[in-house]
Amino acid sequence: MKRKKRKSRDVEKAYPISQFVAKLRRLADAIENDRPFRIQIAGQRVAIPPHATISVEHECEDGAEEVEFQVKWRNR
Image (cartoon, rainbow, N blue to C red; front, side, top):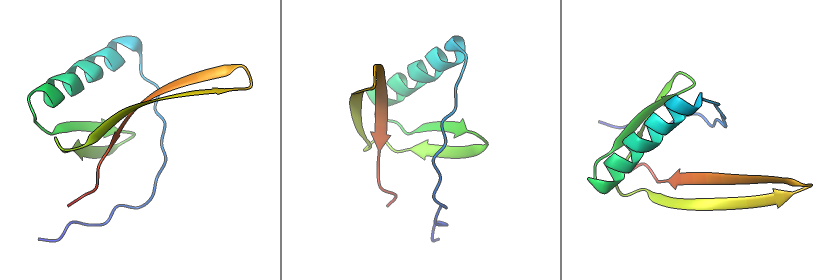
């Protein structure tokens, strides 16, 4: 069965600290146990496979700083 191609989207969603921490803990557990991680972001379900690449990005611009934890993969 062929997967449906997803439409392009760029969504940023803010969460209360307690929810963010819970999501990070679930992600860490999935990574440690080589399992997929499933999350719903702004109404869309996303499944992150265990083979995903994880990186940390730091940006400084105009007196503001940002750290992003990025998880990237290609659908097979």
